[in-house]
Length: 547
Image (tube, rainbow, N blue to C red; front, side, top):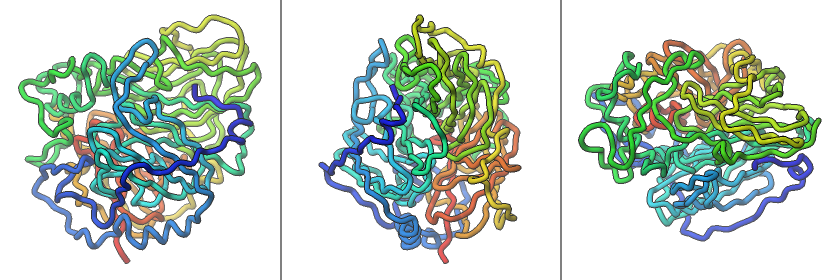
């Protein structure tokens, strides 16, 4: 159960640990080849190449990055050790073989205070290389955790020391940026405390949402990606198609643990087909997702054996929602309660009441609720997929709600990010953009050729920006699928005084203009946070030019 009393949080200590394996520090250019994906392997490319040379851009470990880190200061060091390893995990009556951080799901929560220096030694005990991306943090570029772009892959049997200053309080999380590892059990919450916390509450409940298939009937995320990369030619009635496509000759990303594509048909021998057909959601503009997950989890638990938050009637509870899913948006509600939204993606918003929230992959919301007397379901509906996950708030006696319980609040008032406004402290200063970057989301399920501007990801293909600029991202979704777009190392402002965020849902056929200040030098990813879309090519790089 991810719940804490306010007093316990303020008094909690942090364990100090050291490194046990060879540390692997990376320097200079990290790309292992001219066209490398997040697994370090070469990808085919189209006929166009970037006009700029890699030497024109700020390097992830360049002096500009070091100077920006010095300006952030260096507070108390909070040291952690973490080991990704094959694990046997009990989901609550169903045991699966997967990969996890230190044999627990989700991984152990990290909690620091804004201004601290976070020092993590990652010891890789996996059979693959890995990495850690600190989702939502504006941190130094060489700690961002993107193999072949900001660091070398952390090979099996090797450790890597992540160390950086944490500047912004809020709700964050971390996961690999290597192949489709995020869709295993490799994720955990990161909570950054505000030393001047303005909110008053008695208890916290961290809620991590996830869609699950790894180890179920022989399935793995790598097998699912291989199946999807065959496209939908053999699957009818899915409702995908249309849109712009990638360059001729381009191929997808990771094809499995050993880089070998599947052979024959569209189904892998490692498990049943996981391609989802007929998923529909009005909230998501049509098709809801690509993958048919057998399970949906809250804090690593099935609804039959739910995570339980125990509190007293009248307690004011801060709930921190994190969507760690690979392919699923969740609509969440707490039965019998109204939620007051206080933060979006870590940044404060003007408080707004709602019955339910919709979270795309990678998004986070903080809410406050005043607990009533009884037993209440916290339900996360897998939007458009006809399944749900459940946890329980218990403040008194009563029976635990059944797994099929559907609170009426799920069909009540819904607030999206676009209907929220940034709090005054988080509001962007009005300024005309110095540069507009066009990001056209392209591809189709029919070919599974997801891309940006018709081009699949290459770490050497970079869109230039300059330090000090106000940059507008003009995002246009040319596909028939929704995409949760995520930016690394920065926080953009939604239009018309909207909240500051790092992830936002872009519906099919829609355009979204967001702006951010170029104040964190380096090479930074922008990508769809559907892990199967990104690993098939829907990623690109914003690169700071030198000088």
